[in-house]
Length: 307
Image 1 (cartoon, rainbow, N blue to C red):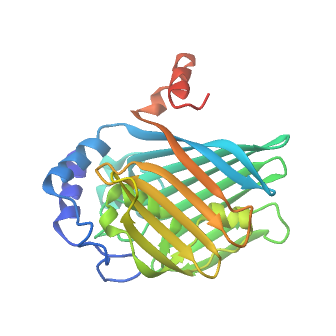
Image 2: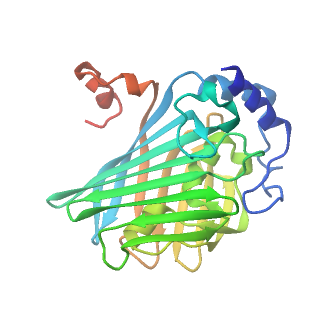
């Protein structure tokens, strides 16, 4: 893993840079970049050949009622192709095309009466936020008995290329470009990589893709207000995003100390009762889960509180 260590050294030598501008985040003095000791912790934690898996108790509003369910966050580092924007199968053969990323696979599962809902999104954020300040890709799908949708954002040059494939006639198949801005979907990765890089104040932000699916609001750059502050729990920080035009707020609670585990998050909407989400952490484990696919490995689902 020599190349990983090399990139991490480059990451923490300089000040951070925001995706939308070249200015330094306003919260950098209050929540400074990592110390030398934490840099070593980052390397040991995220490049140990395992993923971090966290399960959450989910309350998801749909069709005017709160549904009980579960959500799972899987964070893992992997080599990413700069040109193809997919995971590199053989990074040793093409280091010049490689960008180390932190990937988040996030799922939500809940039932609406007789039929189930399932969503998943994958977010690919470069670990070296100074050299590569923009999240490179978001892919999101939603499945339920009425049909399924898929959408993707790819950062190309100075825009995000957006594709949407939906069973709804009003949405249909769509391709468009969205101007460069922070992504709501990348915020969880930013917290895990370095909370000191989170944007604050009045910012340009592309709302979350799950929000877009559930509300059927087309994705575009919105004006939002963001704050990072101490939470009531002295061991946690709170990051909050509010969208004045959408009447919507996202609040994320996470551990102050590295590795900044996400403890809970909440979405609320003053305009739409169906856009309410609450999630509280059940359990976190480290695991090379891709190798645990035997019948005997079902025990890990019980440990995570998923069965």
